[in-house]
Image (cartoon, rainbow, N blue to C red; front, side, top):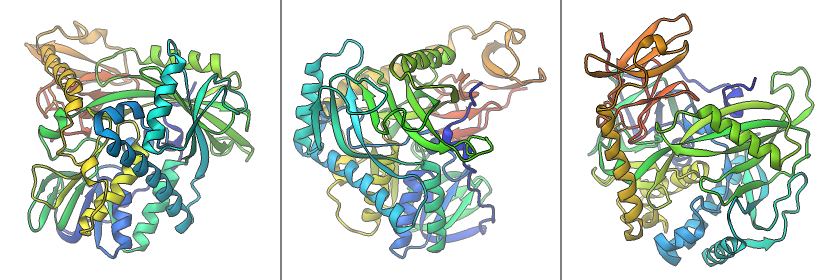
Amino acid sequence: MPRSTSLWQQTTALLTTSPLQKHSRADVCVIGAGIAGLTTAYQLAREGRSVVVIDAVAVGGGQTSLTTAHLSNEIDDSYEEILRLHGPDGARLACDSHRAAIDRIEAICGLENLACAFERVDGYLFLGKGAKEKDLDRELEAARAAGAQVDKLQAAPVQGFSSGVCLRFRNQAQFHPMKYLQGMAKAFQRLGGQIYTGTKAISVESGQPAVVRTADHIAIEAGAAVIATNSPFNDLVTIHTKQAPYHTYAIGFRAAPDAIGHALYWDTEDPYHYIRLQRTTNRELGGDNDEAVDILIVGGEDHKAGQAKDADRRFERLAAWTRERFPAARDEEFRWSGQVMETVDGLGFIGRNPLDAGNVYIATGDSGMGMTHGTIAGILITDLIMGRSNPWTDLYDPGRVRSGAAVEWVKENLNVALQYASWLTPGEVSSIDQIAPNTGAVVVEHGRKVAVFKDERGEVHKRSAVCPHLGCIVAWNPAASSWDCPCHGSRFDKFGAVFNGPSPGDLERVS
Ligand code: FES
């Protein structure tokens, strides 16, 4: 049986436990110890700023631990689309910024001597079902116009995979995200930075100073606050109408070392498949020797969060797709799923929060490129806080509106509006007896929707199924054993405690 964790979660999470003072002060308070938050904190600490990082969970314990960690400047939504939405200058800046992010990660690995398996590889975009060669030609033209180092080949020159005609993006990269984050966290602490995990922020007030308040009644005063959570919790509406949560699935297959060429691979399907390899050892996988093993990581089967109930079938389709194309794939070692925030125009929202005074910054909207967008956040927000100009400011401005994204904006917000119809539908099961142990379902009790989780002993745990953010009805996610809101990305553990997203609190208790 594959483990229901990501490959990276084998690496022990970094927890820091020393308590914060009731009233703390720093130049900058960063909320979120994932890649965006920690890169920003590390960069600022290198510039001599005093920085406090807080996170409700461990370092990298949010979506960073669930990434597949592709480091690429081939934009997830395609250069053709980025060119249409952001124009030629915008596409060039997008290409430059993601390239610079990969270079910055490589530089930090060198500077801090991080053993995180950073590796330069090429990336190959190949045709998915129903796609035509002319689709690749259009992308080739757009990517070249944006400045990407790209060429067209009749087949990827790699072992163990017959790609057919494809585009090759040079000089991409990959790494072990949790080892990278842990190394960067330690370097940040050496520079005088402070990290407090298990510390949940509940509000941020802008102004001089900005004040971050935590669930433990601690107030942190800072010259600037950075909210680097997957979906910002400080903004009730604005940013959430411009991005939507999607779930994606990944499987890690064991493979003999080098049986498949180390590279990044993507196809042109929608949703697309994404593939790469990670070198590890038998010991790291729980074995008793240090023999090298490659893990073939394959992702795809995305859907809107909280709007699909067939995780098992999605994993099976992903496995079948892989075995057809990668005969060297052996046993499945890992199965996991993660959440991606897709923006309406394909690029992250990074910069000053539009509704706050100038000293509150956000980084969100990973758009399936969380590692590079997170690193761009580290570079860009550091420049903004240090008072330097940065050529990417307008491109990633959270307040931006691109007219070409209007159709996507309407589509996503219509989808959200439709979710409110769930108030009127029957429960997923008519009685709690129909819920199997270790699973959950929404039932209707006395006219109210109730999220019911039944544990392995058959004990029943009930919470209101109404999301405290803006009132959508949550849905059970069998792949992650969580309650997920289909509207703006809030997620709750099986007992109803919020661990992601804009929800200001847990699912309400019901008697
Ligand atoms: Fe907005 Fe749930 S996340 S209503």
